[in-house]
Image 1 (cartoon, rainbow, N blue to C red):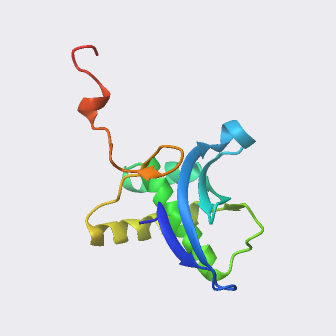
Image 2 (image 1 turned 30 degrees about the horizontal axis):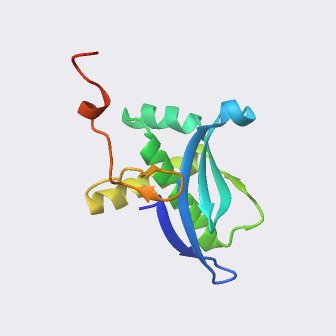
Length: 146
């Protein structure tokens, strides 16, 4: 859905290719209480900062957590919407509020329900995105050596 998508820039009409690259805990990198989700937009870095409080609020309201996969989908959907609304292409970071995260989460879940699943994030090999190997619990841990 939103890990690799195209969107048209509102002002220029340019086709922008957006690709998810990473989720990073911002506490370590910029001392912020947030998760930074990195995308490349036509090869240029773009960050969507999501407040950690959104994870707490989602757990409180539903008993469920926001996974890394879901965070990337939420941030990607937000990125797509700000581009369509006419974002400032010179900025490399946009911050979401807790309310925006939860609203985008609800929208992603509706879309995923229509498609019957939330896609998994691809494993990056440094050059291309490959989905040929998605580890299963069996392949991660050898039960005889656990």
